[in-house]
Structure formats: C-alpha cells, structure tokens
Length: 40
Image 1 (cartoon, rainbow, N blue to C red):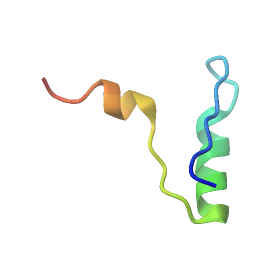
Image 2: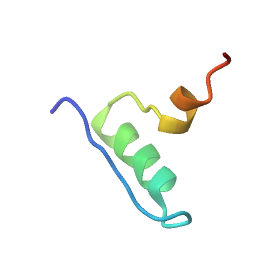
Image 3: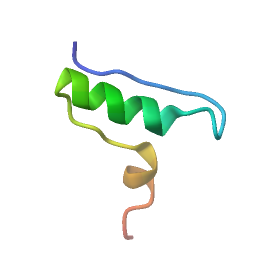
C-alpha cells in the first residue's frame, strides 16, 4: 500500500482518522494543507 487518501466535509473526523491510521499502520502522515500553505 503506497497511499491512503481520505476526503470529507469539515468536522467529519478526517484528522482524527488519519492520525490513528498512520499510528496503527506505521505510515507517514501528510496533511494537504501543510503542503499547500508552504512559505512562498
């Protein structure tokens, strides 16, 4: 498994789910907001 993409409405628990999945599956976690709002 290379990637898991989780989409949903605001407040639906996406961040909670991704944190728990990343911990259980020992996968890196990257939020798209972190990539989109990079300096510059």
